[in-house]
Amino acid sequence: MKAAVVHGKNDIRIEEYPTPSAAAGEMVVKIKASGICATDIKTLLGQGLPKELPTILGHEVVGEVHELGVGISGFAVGDRVAVYPIAVCGDCYYCRRGRHNLCENEFGLGHGIEGGFAEYVRLPKQIVAAGGVVKIPASLSFERAVISEPLSCGVAALRANRVQPEDTVLIVGAGPMGLIHLKVNKWAGARVIISDLLPQRLDVAAAMGADHCINVAEQDLKTAVKELTGGAGAEVVITSLGIPKVIEESLMLVRNGGTFNIFGGPPAGQPISVDPRWLHYCEINLTGSFAATPDEFRKSLELIASGEIVVDDLISDRFTLDSMLDAVERAKNQEMIRGIVLF
Ligand SMILES: [Zn+2]
Ligand SMILES: [Zn+2]
Image 1 (cartoon, protein in one colour):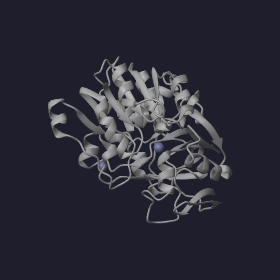
Image 2 (cartoon, rainbow, N blue to C red; image 1 turned 90 degrees about the vertical axis):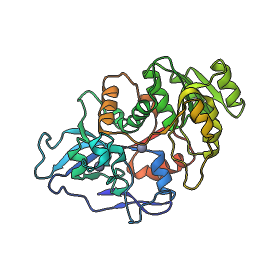
Image 3 (cartoon, rainbow, N blue to C red; image 1 turned 180 degrees about the horizontal axis):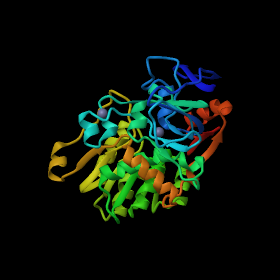
């Protein structure tokens, strides 16, 4: 098969790669669309690059069942499916409590096993057995369905943040995931303030229904948020970027009793400082959210299929596997909202 193969840091090549086959309990999916995530670009640039190379990145995958391993029922070759990308053991402390995204034995597409920037992908039995292969309704296009994975991370953050209708939610960073948080929180009935340095991103956020857009190149974020919240701050603050200094400066924007969610993964070795008196006396819920559970993944696919959350405007660029290297360049330069590779 043809694949975008990673040989090392910032070294990705379009080349032939062995086509996978399905052992017992496994499945092979013929990929129809793969999403390009900021995580893929961070990994390619060396943050969390697997030791065993070459490898194939990509964890946002939809396609058609191509081969079924022995022992799989309920699926037929040709079924249209979306894939939850984390292989979970189902048996550890976290899996038994429904917190599969924290599984002690997890690995997944693009980290540990070959991912979705290829014509075919092998799904290990842990993904299949966890209900991670979800049929796509006939009415739903692959293009829309491939947004289910990133959307599920927004749905997971909604759970962590305990958002109530009419809460004010501040999203710091209007990149690809910041815009997904915007969509999910608007769906939940919140009032959304979103900030970024790039005016073109804020224009997109405004078109997607953000209540207030703050350009931090022109306005002081703290002053603007205090003005918009009667001096109190937002019930929920989500930092959707990996810059520790900005995360630290945003802490003071959450109101007493509110939730502060560190969403974007910062680089290692850059701690921030937090005043424990503030956490205590103001009852701040300081949290993070990472990936999603299989339930949240299925929920997000339903939200797209039902039209409750419109995702078309999240897709800014379409590529083929052959033009994947252009996609990587555009993603590195922050020129896309979301790029997808269509097969
Ligand atoms: Zn992703
Ligand atoms: Zn587990």
